Picture (spheres, rainbow, N blue to C red):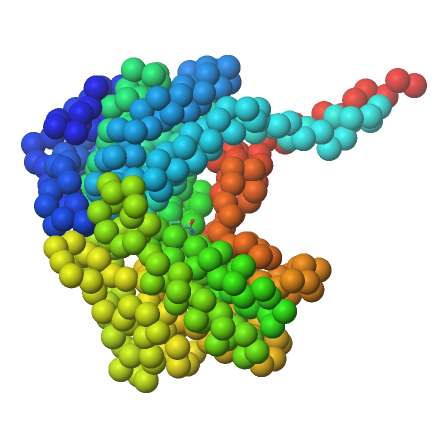
Length: 474
Ligand code: NAD
């Protein structure tokens, strides 16, 4: 088994060391969270070969696949504490939230275990039988970001394995430790080669995308990388699932109960320090309620306990890595220079550690980078509006289209406005609710395809139509 003291990569059912390692930094302390082996290009080839070889038997055995998915859920549940502690150490997530992520990942595996591959019966009459079966694609390159590595990786692994595909997983170099540990726990649970885990930098990801043995790339990460992957996948017309960045708007109507919704909106924007693809990243508030709502949000921000992820009292940890910390700091600095006001926060907390307090910014326009770009951190612009049509227009005036929400006491009016929001998911009186049975993904530059639900499973399948003419009986 892989331990934190000696993490090893998973290739063809074996745990392998590497000639070189790198250090993953604990963002709460600036000290090492652990050391991780780096996969060479030879090891990458071995991983893809192993996945190809394992594919034949795997594709033919749905009962083993179901048992394997149940076993993945069990391993996650039985080792939840160790996995959550490692996750808290490497990305600074409060321990309770890290435990929630591991439990949610187990839920995704359990859901796929319980969902057999469907067969669609299009025609079944005296003239013909037309059925659509699901066949595996082959080797899935699963490439994941640093912000929710366990949940995102397990969703991809579970969907691919359920479809009969095999997987080569490449974690982010900023958050590989928990997934490497999980690989060690799964080494004896899954048949060799069905799941392989290789860690390395962005170039290793690019080499995996272009590898001739790969049939599909399932990617979650930034829009810029999604574009590069789409271009690299073009020569072989490789199947793609792209779950990319977002700049979600929330629209608050004048009829809301301010005190009741403030904690929910705050959580929608600042849960996990705002490092959530579908966090609220722009808040449009009707002028009738903008002052009381901003004040109520400020009270929640001031009650936030920013600190040690292992202290049970902590409600927000540090920003997960130095590059992201610098991005948030520069977006807030730019907004303040452009005339914005920080109602709360506005500058980094004391070190060591990458702490940045929840920051509400008012007085910024649509062209301010904090509004126009994805901040992916604990900073939220609050923008007043008078006219709902203008607010919908502003919410939609972005290249992103991941999520959006409407907050109102009139849920049918809310649902009508939600239907006009150009996003893969539009919520009313909630935000970023993601579950295994509900499709999730982005329009425009937030992605291609949908994860979760039956449509999410179909992404990992070849649809195979069998059309049979029946003999005439007279
Ligand atoms: P990133 O694009 O920098 O990296 C993601 C992964 O891609 C890493 O493993 C990285 O090593 C790899 N990679 C980088 N360049 C590559 C290339 N050319 N070819 C192949 N692989 C390559 O993203 P990040 O900073 O890790 O993640 C943050 C972003 O992810 C945010 O934009 C966030 O919104 C997005 N995200 C989206 C979702 C979603 O479901 N839509 C979920 C979580 C995060």
